[in-house]
Length: 279
Image (cartoon, rainbow, N blue to C red; front, side, top):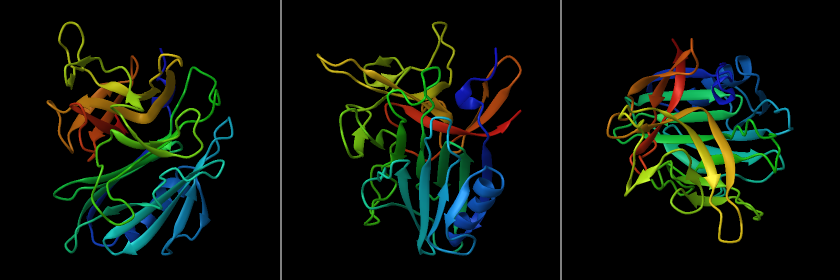
């Protein structure tokens, strides 16, 4: 058994300590994305705002661009477009804050198909985006699946919709991205629900970390649609782990990944953790 495709992508993790200016994040991502990760910088560059980074092009032609803009020393803006030019986080932009001096730590997780920026404030703020892996289905059938978190802040700078359960996605049959709720329009699969709580455990009671994967629920006349997995991400139980916790997850018979819980607010007792290392 090999490492599943959604865990078998290149990834980087960086811990920034006491960040006092979000330009540090933009600049360090040049190293992680362009120098290490095979992305390209299409606008701007180190020391410049705004700066636009473009992912490597997937085998089906899918890619996305992310523009990072320094609104102020403590506020960072994200604008994401898919490969046909649609605005994914369709609210002008999405914003994230760091604390004023002496600042706070910031973690970034990146790969060819995902980007996560986590501001470890007293109340954590996290932005994530990416392309879902649809293996073993043909990647472009029926089309690539892009996603972006609706928070932590909207374009007015208001702290809102920090839960991972609010995501910008393009529903089947629609022409524009919109915020979808995990309760209604898009869901994380593989988490059997019991009342209001998702129980992530085997029949014997062993708690497990599940791949984070989407599906679009169907209707009485339309079948549901499995929409793929988030690369280098697992779902964990919020009754066991909290923000900043780390968990070792076996990926195959010989490979273990180290995943760290990010600051997206729990939904139905689930938190998301992204891969930072391999044991």
